[in-house]
Length: 256
Image 1: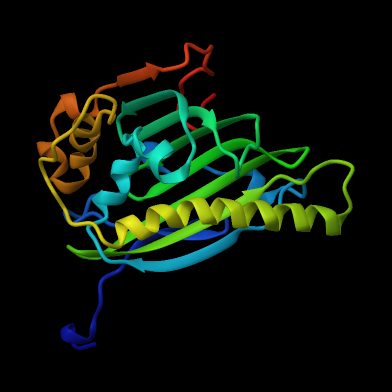
Image 2: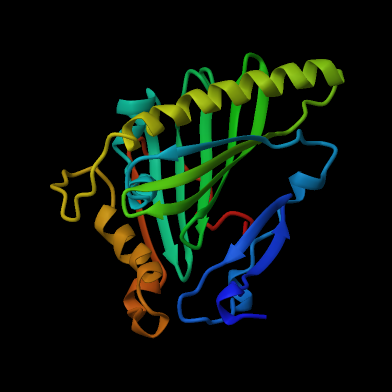
């Protein structure tokens, strides 16, 4: 076979009914600890199927990742004031825990969302809210792949847990309604990402969240592995208990 007719090969895995490709410009194999965690809900009759969207966003993908530390935007952008906010950075994982309120996703009840980045581009959120008089448990998927320095392809998905006692048709209607509400909130972010420019040293205010610490953690994915500083991947926690509530334990998704 002519050498110029050959193409490179990629390490792949199929998990959670999605296909993943391992990319390492140095040719290193994926270490065991970065394996994509299994989401049991994907294979359970107690949960809906993925509702998936795909879109092209015209900005640097780091602007999306800023959201895991951008505490201030929840109330301003989503109308969802935050009572408790925390970040946990450790190794290749970056986690956000929020407890707050959302008229769309929890009514008058508390909304709890625990989300973790597993590596640079695989983000899972476990969320507990309410639709009408029904408690709703959902899992949100957020995957992004850079196209170039100023655009990325975004895949967004939602799983909703079926409500016991409701018929299949009723559960489908509840799941679809909640998915639409979750999408509506997510697209408020998309509208901003699609018109943002990259600013490496933004002027921050008290209460914005640990943006610079998050970027330090995320920088490990933009440098050779041997050049990653130990401080960038060491365990670090940040929290702000605005309402003085008793928060859930802070941990990475799937590790509680």
